[in-house]
Amino acid sequence: MRSAGFSSERSVIKPAVAATLFAALLSACSQGGGAKSSSSDPYAGLDTQILAWRTEIEASHPACASKVEGKGCQDFQVMCKAAQEITPDETAKGVTAQIVAAMTFAGRNPDGSTGKSGSSFATFSKAGDAWTRAEAKPVNLTTCAPLA
Image 1 (cartoon, rainbow, N blue to C red):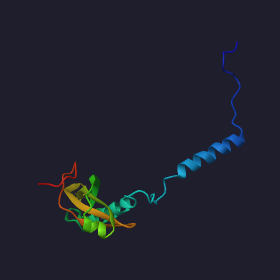
Image 2: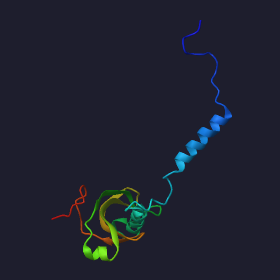
Image 3: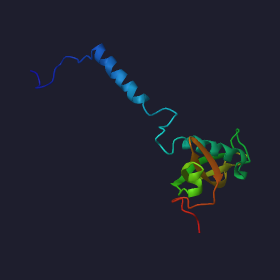
Image 4: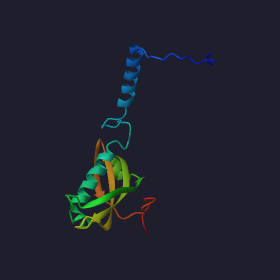
């Protein structure tokens, strides 16, 4: 007795169909995952600058001075990023995007335990394809709004 719609025979995917599915999957996985972002994205390249900022914090912030296995801080988190208004002077200089960001992190004690917490604030400005970073005044860690 056979069930309606089911077969006791195994289903076999033909090699040509399998190759086509594999090629489609490979193509889908390779799209948009590269290191270069779309040039139409006004924030393309910002992620690289945030990583460079983190590296600089690790090397120079007082909370990261005590090194354990070569690392002075841990638990880096970008708490907020917010677009900033571009002034006419900045527009004249070619600035096309501007972001303020806040990052928190924790120092490490010589015994490896969590040490002093720290935070850093930066303004990132994009002109052409290049980003620059400058220190920013502290902002609200949730909204990135300036502190009064």
